[in-house]
Amino acid sequence: MVGKMMKAMIAMGVSLGIVGLLFTIYCNVQLKTAKCQTYSVDHTEKIKEVDYVIVPGCLVYKSGKPSYALEDRLNGALRLYQEKKVPKIILSGAARENKTGKIFLTNRNVAEEDILIDDGGLDTYSTIYRCKEAFPNKRFIVCTQQKYFKRTGYLISKLGMNGYCMGIDKHQYKKEIYEKFRDFFASDKAWIECNITKPEPVYSLEKLPIK
Image 1 (cartoon, rainbow, N blue to C red):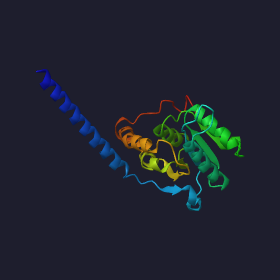
Image 2 (image 1 turned 135 degrees about the vertical axis):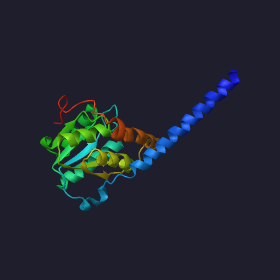
Image 3 (image 1 turned 90 degrees about the horizontal axis):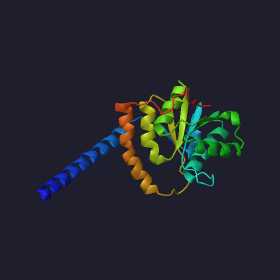
Image 4 (image 1 turned 30 degrees about the horizontal axis):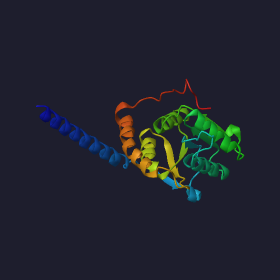
């Protein structure tokens, strides 16, 4: 009896795992349907002027040094700013990430008044949602790694932002395989948020404005 129950539980677990994997594959396919223009930091001459460049938050070490991923995003935004492709930079992530980003940019002669802080951008969905809501009818470009283009582009498209992605991969990143694996399964969350739950960010602009 116990053996039969165990076999049934194993079969159910395997079935649920297969269903979950098929759903993840479906979500990844759906994310590929998004029509979002992408660029490379190596070809900024192709990028038209926009109103804001967004730097999504990323790992900051205990020493206060930005990870290579965040450093590349900041350098991408800095290049657009220096080339006068964009007048304002939005740092969107956890407060510590944004503080590190602001220090990085001001040390490279970006005017403080040209840096906006979004401490409510706790994930990519919240970042896109809040920036689009705070600055309606404005044009954006998001500096991120190419492996995130599919998910970021889908969120930009589904949330109605007039925006694009710019790839800034200049380093060899740690845990690259893990990050790609993680982003593959993060497609579920992006698809569900955009098509089913449609949540508002944890922090509204009233409670935590972009400034």
